[in-house]
Image (cartoon, rainbow, N blue to C red; front, side, top):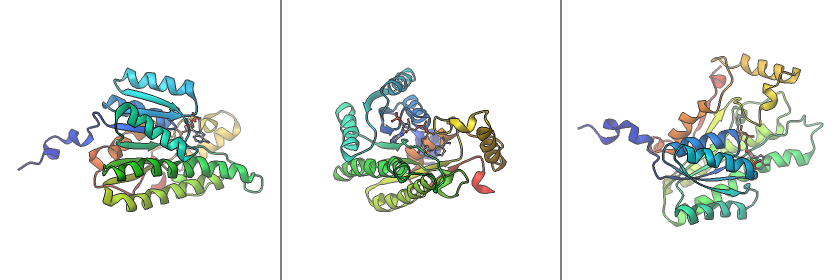
Amino acid sequence: MISEPLRHPLSLFDNKGKVAIVTGASGAFGRGCAITLGALGGKLVLASGSKGELDEVATEVKEVGGEVETIVRRPDSLDDAKAMLDAALTRFGRVDQLVVASGMNKPGFIHELDYEDWQAVMDANVRGIWLMAKAVGSHWIANKQRGKVLLMSSVRGRHGNYSGYTGYCTSKGATDSLTRVLATEWAKHGITVNAIAPTVFRSKLTAWMYGDDQLGQQTRARSLSRIPLGRLGEVEDLMGMAVYLLTPASDFCTGQIMYVDGGYTAG
Ligand SMILES: NC(=O)c1ccc[n+]([C@@H]2O[C@H](COP(=O)([O-])OP(=O)(O)OC[C@H]3O[C@@H](n4cnc5c(N)ncnc54)[C@H](OP(=O)(O)O)[C@@H]3O)[C@@H](O)[C@H]2O)c1
């Protein structure tokens, strides 16, 4: 007998009615996820510190048929994280998916970098994940509800970098570790936790790498020389993996760092 998933394989990617919280929703990856999930029938709670940009993304999500709520917050404290959870529960009555797309970088060589800048990167990229996981995961566990978490790592979680990345690389190594430890801790609750690890894709974060100045050209050339597929990424390149990791298709996949990197880590 042919099972349902084999007979109707697209049902594995069903997202209709699912409620997602997306932090950093004003950014490239957050926006991409919000629109994609909205187009697949999802309901979105979009969070970021920039009201204007958030409103623009909300309009785009509605344009593709998604329902949307916005909250002007970054995950800086447990109160912020709980406020995002409350926004989801108040508007939609539940939450099924958590996407932590907030993050930043402050490149600088360690002998020149201020400690505060290093700490700011760790806070944005690691503390934010921990706080969101604590707020949303506690809710799921208390309510005996399954859930899916998608984190944003980077090839920098595995590789060093020439450009003054003691904060960024360390924060992504910690993201990889959080992915594995949360996945292990929460498997018995039916909660999956995975991360996407891209190489460079176009966003505010990487705008400087796309510039025509010497730094932009050099950095781009160095990245391209390591990418077998011969180009940098676009956010659309990441959406197939994001949908997989947030839908039933990935129910037997947890604790994984998924490299969507044009082959960067293969060579
Ligand atoms: N682009 C790449 O090449 C690349 C490669 C590998 C991994 N990543 C990772 O992908 C994730 C998304 O990045 P992106 O490329 O989409 O960047 P992006 O377009 O700059 O978006 C990042 C978002 O994070 C928020 N943010 C900025 N500073 C923050 C802070 N201090 N605390 C909390 N939130 C802050 C911003 O929202 P508000 O300012 O509105 O709050 C922004 O919308 C990040 O974790 C990044 O490290 C990106």
